[in-house]
Amino acid sequence: MTRSRSIFVGCASALLVAACGAGPDGTAGDATAASAVRVGIQVTEAWVRPADSGAASAAYLVLANRGVMADTVVGIVTEAAESASVHETRQHEGTMHMAALPTVAVPAGASVTLAPLGTHVMLLRLRRALRAGDTAAFGFVLSSGDTVPVRAVTRAP
Image (cartoon, rainbow, N blue to C red; front, top):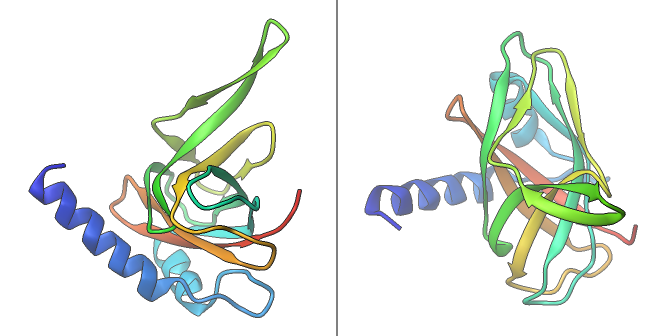
């Protein structure tokens, strides 16, 4: 990893940790709402599957762009796992396959749903186990340069 990328990830992670407050229902707290007003992207219904430390998990949510300009998810930052990315599940010749998506467009005034058996966030090599009621924090890095923090509650599908 280049030095500038390392600095970016470190700064984005610090921003994420500082901004990922959650309300009593596990949804994004005031810091996320303040960020969403600025960038136009709001996250709702965020949840993540339970998994053991070192394993993979998947997160699901709705990205709603309340702004007047389109934006694009170009990456994910997290300290919950060694890496994270957006994947899409597709059926090909009767078999389900997953493939990483380099970007996810979030058009102005529209919502993008990340759901089981569709587009979702993969958290790879979890740093700790995720049990029912735990949370996993990550952030969507947008092409606009902003990062939208997410706090997903762990629950069974």
